[in-house]
Image 1 (cartoon, helix red, strand yellow):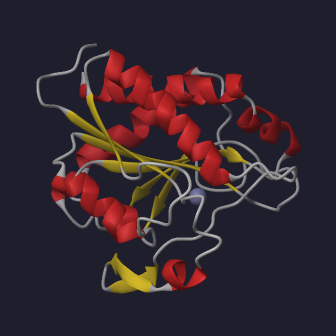
Image 2 (cartoon, protein in one colour):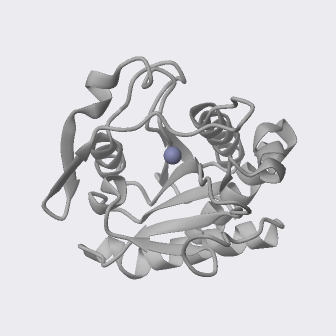
Length: 219
Ligand SMILES: [Zn+2]
């Protein structure tokens, strides 16, 4: 499926490499939607071998951008490198809103310490607080879930249901005025899944599934 003229996709690579060294900036409270505030961001998680979530999300996002750019989509990233601080979660939503994005996908990996916890899940804002968070977001979440399953990734066995998890506490989703979902690609603390998350081949598989879901959703 080819892009329609002017169709913008925003990719939001979770966390950033400079966050851990800048706790004051990262811990400051920002608007989180639904009348709440929340910390600007967190450091994210890592595999037991030390491969960081921020490096994973950055690498996968670049791979998704490459795939979507080849299809003609205009792709905007919420951060420009893997060494800076932030942006904060409210600003990550703002970038998608100001870009009038046709779709926004936040890319993460989880860090559950529950023994045996593994699999991906797609978080979406629930209950919706605007029209974009209703049917369009539901369709984006389902399309991404289906693409991940089709690519052979197991749905999470420790959170959500059938690879989907409605959330009211994620600022980057609450504040979005565009269809936006957040995919936790896998559990970095699960040894088998960590090897997929840590390998370039594994990351390309995640990226291919995410890119194909976005193209399918927009097609
Ligand atoms: Zn994360």
